[in-house]
Structures are given as structure tokens and as C-alpha cells.
Amino acid sequence: DTGVSQNPRHKITKRGQNVTFRCDPISEHNRLYWYRQTLGQGPEFLTYFQNEAQLEKSRLLSDRFSAERPKGSFSTLEIQRTEQGDSAMYLCASTLYSHNEQFFGPGTRLTVL
Amino acid sequence: QQPVQSPQAVILREGEDAVINCSSSKALYSVHWYRQKHGEAPVFLMILLKGGEQKGHEKISASFNEKKQQSSLYLTASQLSYSGTYFCGTAPGGSARQLTFGSGTQLTVLP
Image (cartoon, rainbow over all chains, first blue to last red; front, side):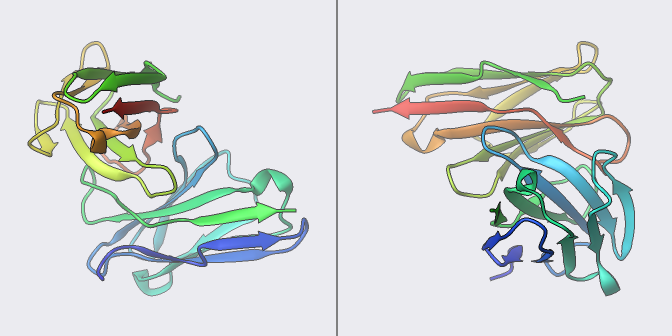
């Protein structure tokens, strides 16, 4: 399977704990995006990588969120000191060129108790 | 600023047509359309670029009015498989580093 994969698919955590999600993009795609989606809303942009460089980060993104893409391959999104408001679906997408189709992964559903 | 989609929801019978609109308060370079079924990831439908270029599926058409900063998605002879939530994503600049998605239009096709 050459699609975008994300792990874990589901994560339940207690408020205050740290969580880390992983995204493996399509192998030749050098652009990788993280989005957050809550019920009834469209995906909300979080951050963007071109290769290993993080080029954009949402101004709405709390300092508790950090993302990395070492070596320009897989990416991780970490949320520190989780809050109930962080509960959402976290989507990863990759693409080869700007203004081209973004391929979305199945997402990681986070529930913060 | 998030683009505004209309209608928020539409219900139609198989074979009927539907139009979904997306408007932005900012000048746009490209508009991206995606469909998401319940519990699944968004799936690409169409990209419309400033200047008239389009990339997408043959059975789905769309328009992009750059001056009005609006796009419309046309679904003709709808099938049951068209059901889902449709999102438009807009990119204001020459680079699609950041797509801003609307809140979606829920389309239900009944037999």
C-alpha cells in the first residue's frame, strides 16, 4: 500500500499527559501537512513541511504543539500537557507539488478525558 | 479567513443535480474541492487554479470566478456514492502552503 499512513488510529489519554502521533507520507512526496478536524468542521491547518523544513505554522497553534520531520520522511506531531479541547481527529496529508492533490491519511482520533 | 460554503446541507434523489458554492473574502490563487464520507479521510475531487487551469475528475465539474473570489462545484446526475460532506479549501497565494477549508456541505443522495 503506497498511501499515507498514520499511527495510532485512536488515542485516549488523560488531561495533562503528552501524546505523539506519527505520519508516513507517500514516499516521493516532499510536502507534508498536519490538520486538525473537529465534528462538523473542515480540516484546520496546523503546520506544513517541505522536506525536513517546517515552513508554515498556524498562528492559532499553541506552544504545546510541536511537529518534526527528520530526514524529510515520516513526521511526528506531539501535544504536551493535553487539554480536553485538544480532542479531535488529527489528519496528515502529503503532496508532491503545491497546488496539487493532497493525499490524506486515515487520521488519528484523540480523546482527552 | 475561512471560506463560506452554501448550502450547509442538501438532500436530493438519485439522478438529480446539485451545486455547492464556496466564497472567500480574500483574493484566491486556487480552490481545492474534497469529499469526505463519515469516518473516512477527505478524498480529492478537483483543483481550480487562477488562470483557468483545472485538475480533477471527469465526471465532476467546477467553476472559479477569480474576480468574485467564488467557486462552484457541479454534481450532475447524482449517484448514491456522491453522498458525503464536501469541503472547499482555498489558497490565497502563489504557494499552497496553507489551505483554509470551509465548514462543509453535507450532501445526501436518496434512492
